[in-house]
Image (cartoon, rainbow, N blue to C red; front, top):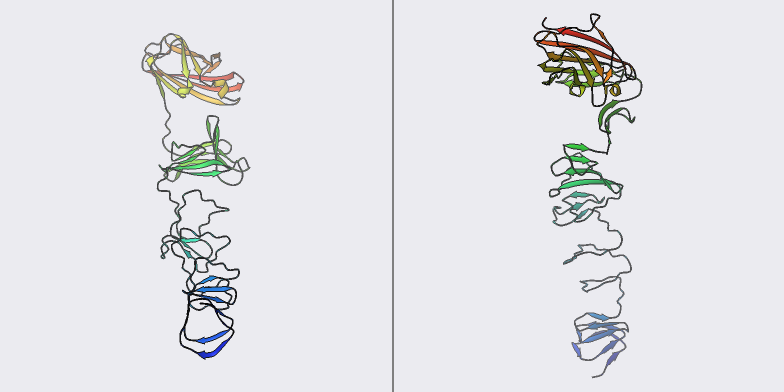
Length: 378
């Protein structure tokens, strides 16, 4: 067959026409069914027997019915009055911003998977991140309910600033600052100068400090009475004033007494590292005995000019010929002023004898010593 060319068909009603070859129509108005294997409309659009446009471009203001296809390109806006369904998708690749007026549900429609409100906040569900979560500014919790950050399987939680770890929470509940391990509930470390600051902006307002092997509790250097107090059972028990005064409330005042079982004889050593009150359970030996009062730091080093200390030495005795009549300090001779006007010349015959020494530093390696002997037997 050849081609049936029709310039114009108007207002005609005809029976069905079957054409097995091409049909070119430049203007037509028909009633009935036109069945063809291929139709060329004008010069730009070809429609096959199934009614599918196989080539050309269709321009229209309105489409009725379904539009089915594999791809679509739109140069202008697309408005959808009903529901846009996108099934069997692994991911959506988009450039630009997506705006959802009523929020966005990810996963279950109930929001279990995650619900984002119109402002972009995760208002329901759980957000899971397999890698780092980068926050541009800050995390803000809105509302008046409690908030929990939970890491169920993590051994540790760390916080970093400036590219370095600053805080660590271990799975045991211990908190480590300045270290990767914690030997207590809260472990603070900063080399030889660890500081915890309390109070106002002033650095010296209130400080607990570990420095070079020493532990210090400090209050502010500003004017006014800055106190350090200790309380038990809701009541103050000890007060240290800004001038260094110490006030103790009523109650037991118990001091440790160091017990030595090696008898003092001729020159006995009294090491104040063991305490200011020392008792020798062995009988005093020798006759005229000297006690050398020392410490690991050195008495002269520990005391400033104007400082004073009291040392009490108690010893068992069994002979009046054994007594103490002299002391040295750091091995340096000291002149004693004995209560009663003269040094002891005898000791007790039984029980214990007590020697008390009040030591005042008046200059470098220079001391005033007020000494006293008390016998419990003749």
